[in-house]
Amino acid sequence: MNAIEIKGLCKSYNDFKLDNIDLVLPSGCIMGLVGENGAGKSTTIKLIMDAIKRDAGEVLVLGADNRSREFLSLKEDIGVVLDEAYFPEVLNARNVNSIMKNTYKNWNEKQFSEFLTRFSLPLKKQFKDYSRGMKMKLAMAVALSHDPKLLILDEATSGLDPMVRDEILDIFNDFTRDENHSVLLSSHIVSDLEKICDYIAFIHRGKLLFCKEKDRLLEEYGIVRMTKADFEGVPEEAVKGKKVTGFGVEALVLRDSVSSAFTVERAGIEDIILYIAKGDK
Amino acid sequence: MDLIISNANSQPIYEQIFTQIKNGIMSGKLNEGDALPSIRALAKDLRISVITTKRAYDELEKAGYIHTVAAKGCFVAEKNVEVIREERLKEIEEHLKKVSELAADCGLSDGEIVEMYDLIKKEG
Image (cartoon, one colour):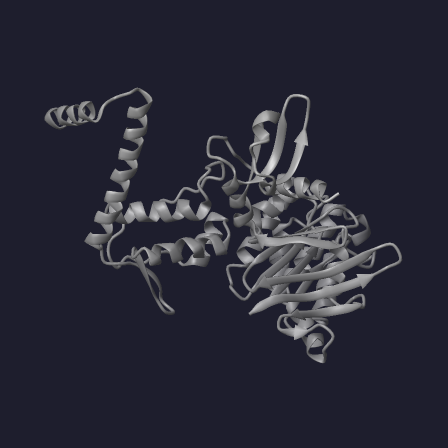
């Protein structure tokens, strides 16, 4: 089964268009959504939750159309964390627990308090006195404590320190030990996504440039550094992006199309998206 | 079982898993009937992609090193003498290719190489 299935999704605003997005997140996998500010990541996530109305296309979440009646009850199985966590200012973690207990059928009080301890969140501090990191962690604890099958996170790890981010990645990793559990997360921090994701989807200016298995991307692409004369011998279709300086050429290439006489270095996901985004201009 | 995955290694991750499990079987560290860790558990413990791990297991199964029992998992298959021989022959061929390349580089004749080989045999 697929946790998320998107076909031909479109949404237009005055100055922005999300254009014909096709995405599939198989169950049990983690997908990372990358793209520059304003690329359409958050729009895509909002469209998945049907928080904004799509213009065209199809969105299936956990097997149901996200505009069907069925989806309303499926929302119990989805944990969402947006880039800013909002709880009423005067509430503390204990109040949040009482509210969620009456909101979610599957609310797991014990798990929630375990997450509070794990994230060292105080029980009595009011939400307005929380730091950004604490707000994020509280939202994460809520999202994880109602036995969700799908986690959707929009920029949830940005603004957190490397230790906490790593801890959260560990939680996602453990979460997907169950093959019915899936995660979709968007982030600017590509290294985080590279660590954890099975799939990487790259949205650039409202268009999906690729949605691929991460390890295949790392296998297919490589970086070469060579003189301009040598570079002329590289077939044009193998070059996916290049940087020419007075001293030589650095280029993103398809490994298989480059003569083995040249050293092809490993390209990180960050290199791949930067070169491809630049090549798209 | 030891499995070391390196990101700096130019060998793709699925190949690293494939080679290390294969070597484990060839060297007798893994024996016929031994259960392998489940794909999901291995992927999550090593913090690598599930799809990549599955690909490695699929390749191992295709090559006849392991077999899958539905709902039970993957097990080391009976050692196939033919497969191992084939594997060794391939390895020897690779080495010989290298030898012939190196020989061509410094103008060594085939006779001289055979001589060298005989000498090594005698010493060994």
